[in-house]
Image (cartoon, rainbow, N blue to C red; front, side):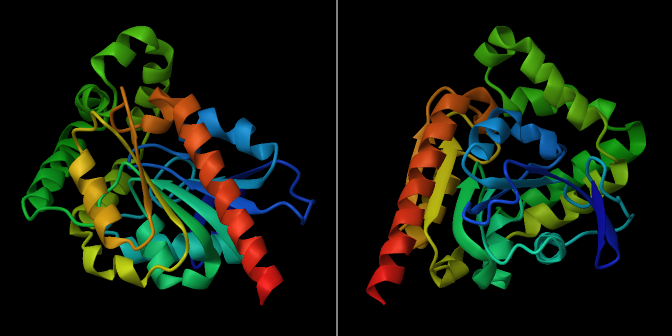
Length: 273
């Protein structure tokens, strides 16, 4: 399905018993050069107990891909507008690599808990040039020129051998990412600089990272954990950047436990106030 929110058309999917208002909302937000389908190992699992929303970020999948530089605030506001248009007053938010931190800082009343997977709160200065080089490759040669190198970063060599179908599935997402969307987000991502603001986030925070993620390594997640008060850090062994795909059982178990605890804590607070 698609909605026009704030002048941008966004594709989204809802899963689970959406009519059951007793179920909390859980929103999944994907990585650069993917789309909502990146969460296939999670959607059916969590739709059993949650109303689940997964959407294509601006410039990705079946959402609009306007030309020009994007900003992280722009992407966060897109997510906010989509959720509000769908009548979602608040939700648990799980994002891999993009959007979650900015969304929570800009619209804290919308987020019941935040899961940050394989991400960073601040990139080093040379990241701007690195992302610019990849964007230039996409503009010059198309997304096909980026598929092989991206998959090499996103999955361990062992996973390339053990689940070639999953790797190919993600490779197809990369290949069909609109160039304008990839370029636009490549301008936004390396300018993330939120470390000093993480203390402003008051909702429960889970940080997960693959122990072999070369793009957003464990040290970046550790920095988020060190600056986000009360957060929990889970390091997923034998996984690179798309830890939710490479180790779905571990990822799902950690996310479910965290959400159960966050919901229980909220219920307890409501009873005592």
